[in-house]
Image (cartoon, rainbow, N blue to C red):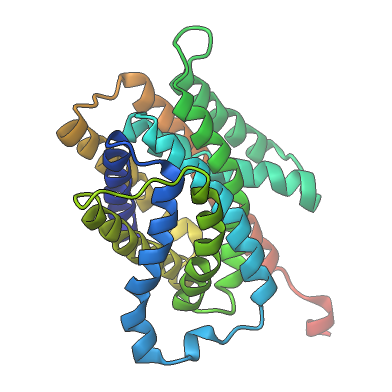
Length: 288
């Protein structure tokens, strides 16, 4: 999970750099998927056709569509020049959106613990944005919309990793998302300069390795065991933003980021705890 957070933070910094050079976020997303596929080739050569084996191809397709929309919004949001630390702080809202969506679409209930965590988390979002007090950066809106959609993708990924390997999940992601992001990129297409190509290749490779690490982390351990390390993204991104883009995060981003992260983690921890209690209850049919 730590390798994943470092990889994603570096990738986001490279995206912002290319955005400052005039390359559209949709096009960067397209090349991320294209070169990400080539980054998987050594693994595919070792495993042969095994990673292609899945019984959940339609679910992979749905995940790709959902993930593509989230990625396009996210990449475009980063290229607007928003501080990288703020980007990561706002992405912590994804688990909060997941919890709300579970209530709306899966029939789960707003219990006291969940409601309290959601209030704390979304209060952190308001602290970062401070609507009516500070001007809201346009990129923040794109990042929040991306986090909402990414929350849906997180649910799908967790279901996929129950039966498919991290390599299979990453493989179908780049196979399906390449054409989808390519359609969006076609509307804003400009050919990259010779200096931009190495950065695009690096984004594809680093992004794919980070995605593999992320997926494998959730495959190997429960979410409550790996999610605390996800907070490192805020630290890594704040450091990269400061060193390479002279971005200094104000205290409100740090406070809001901590609150958002705490809200999301507490929901995951609480749901795991409740699930554990349920699982340890005696089964009348079995005991009979």
